[in-house]
Image (cartoon, rainbow, N blue to C red; front, side, top):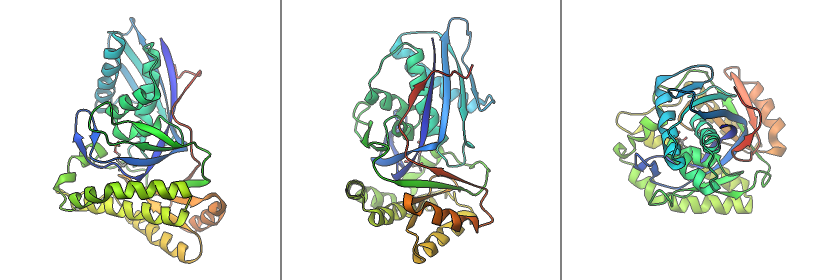
Length: 325
Ligand code: PMV
């Protein structure tokens, strides 16, 4: 059977960094994110007797490393569906992968939904998030709609994601500023293995539940300035852990820091905007819808910017009828 799914990337406001179980990808802490409507992956999967081996094509290319990870994920689904059929997987991102825009989140969410359907299974949203999490942690947050919480959980069954609020809940945007198309040299999966080498990681974990609670409270009250302050401080704390890991992880480029400084300046000039950064040099600017044009005007003045992608919130992963092959 053949099935195609589309899944959004997501931006975490309180971030996932560090695993307590590598194999199951159980995180050390819970996280909260928003799905992004202009960064997405489309994936078609077909299981059939005619395939003698799994064939994986991502953005027109066959990469050995990615293929291994995808096959491992297909195996999880084959086990549940009790099938031995090999599969063809074709996947397309509408944005550059491995630059810190979370292509693994949208990628594994789309793969999970398409492969589950193609294998003839009917799983609950919760079960889909549990499966997606094992492919790439942050992918579980790309399955439900809008604003999503991923519960830390102590076991495979209790570490799952669910929607906190639907995608039209709050008029805030994530304006992604692309600094460069260069790929990062260390993936999130590799970087996360170093978390415990930072002397500050323990401090992070001791405060994280309080942070998650505050984030949910500011979301609930739609308190933009408190929300913005919290998520910016969270990013800087996360990167302090990365910078002080051994070996150190430096994901920023000069352009990233330039935008961070400008964001502070623009706030002083009356545009309420806050930044967040994942494992890459690109920077996400969070702004209320009413300030969209003000911010876009400011961004036009920065010549180092390669591209700007404006994202509203998005619904989660869903099936579509248009197959890629
Ligand atoms: O799911 P991964 O292995 O790509 O890790 C994601 C890590 C961060 O993007 C830095 C944080 C997050 O919660 O998305």
